[in-house]
Image (cartoon, rainbow, N blue to C red; front, side, top):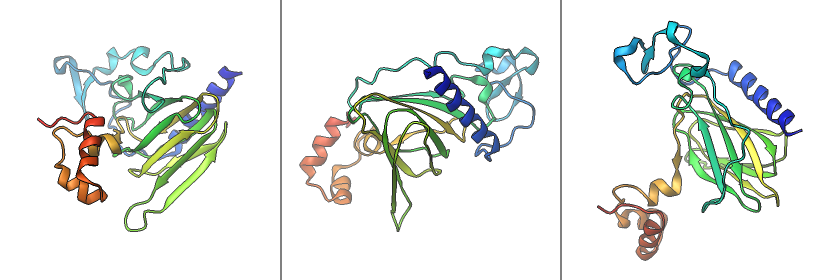
Length: 225
């Protein structure tokens, strides 16, 4: 049964990506398999590209996305992102895929943004409370509880999150409209930057006592050097 749900999720995300307008520039050839050695490359379109005649099925594939990931961390979630770094054949194609695992009773993919992509998510297992916040000045909060088979879209660049409110593990698959969507986790970026943002700035911006800011910066492992 799980294999069927996995297949349905993959087909849904594939169809969604095929009708969407990718955010990355359109390729100028059939494909451009990324390669790190420019001496072995013949095309350039965002990255050095392998000679198309040398491309193989391995450049376009990944195995093991059906395997549950470890969620034994502070937030109780684990994101397995398949972007151009994992699948070189994604280069210039404007899409990527992610599996997200959540621990029971509060596994959280914390508030974050994707600076280069819209995200479409389908729930395979679990019950998720999800939402995003619109841009200034409205800062409208849009949220929904999702069940297996439900789909939700997080618009380009907006802050969003997912929280598992079930007593069992949760799994989702997400398609993103970039070969390298990027992720900015809000708390980590603000309180764990390298070097640290001046605590006075954060204290004023968040209306916090500076001692609380100092505590949060230590908690998120910011580098004061």
